[in-house]
Image (tube, rainbow, N blue to C red; front, side, top):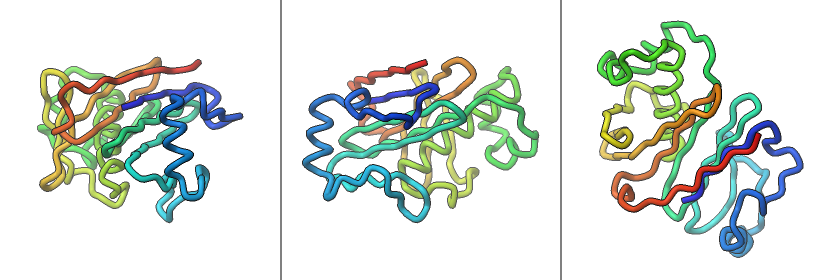
Length: 184
């Protein structure tokens, strides 16, 4: 799995060899029929038209995040900013809020949002799924997010004033090597 965060220059003068390894670029070229990196589906997700390569891209203000793997993945990144308390109650249960006890309210909202948004992207359901239908549970090394019978392992991280999350199927949890990079 490859995890890349990009500050300030997200999609400006994009050079794919900065963000993908030679093997990944070869896979992109071989599997994109035709290579259409800028087209979008009807719901706004990037269209890569590849076989056996999954990619999730997110951005917030001047920061971008991308995750790619040979299994389903999802990602989200958001700037920590002020939120109305009603958003927290709309997207989460009180049990989920308790998982982050002691967090500053705006960080709390952002963490719960990025977890649920990354899972909705990985599943391909996006914003059309009610946030409260995705249930979060804490593990020692991350989180589990469940939607129906689908169970996802989720990691969250903070870089400066941004919180990001990435997820993948729980059965892929063991021995995952993550390469986290960011450019300022």
